[in-house]
Image 1 (cartoon, rainbow, N blue to C red):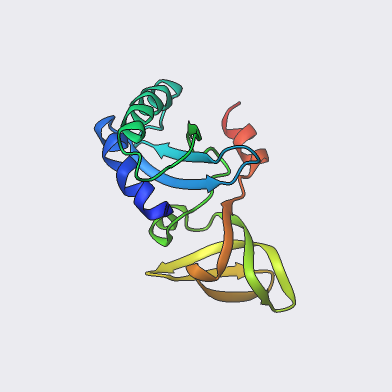
Image 2: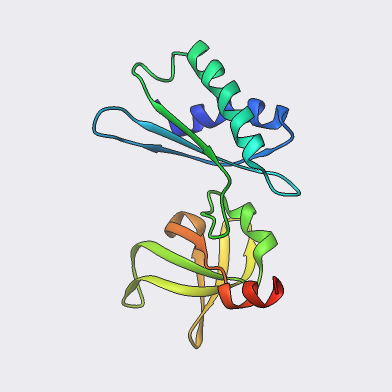
Length: 158
């Protein structure tokens, strides 16, 4: 079972509900795997969207048993405020935002750091980290998550 194949099977169901497929994770559990599906929408996906997509996906994935030869847990949620990024093109809307990054290999003596997104050019991403700029290929990243500024959010929501 490949994550890309699962994503391809899931995407039409998500789109039929007016949402976009943000990402899919396949987690190996002790007893059964978990398929975690993240959905988003222009005005933000709601819990109702998640419930409807989950209901239809349970039916769709049950019909297509070529992906999973065992029971699984299906979770559908929004990416949240500290969203994880699955593709480089998702980053374009988040220029000048801070990110928690974890690299696959050590670079400049570090494997994890916080950096500000400067530019996205296909798979090449430019971050500002401390006093230097760092160019990374999206495939160099093991984890790329938005680091929300909670103080700013509190000021805006007052």
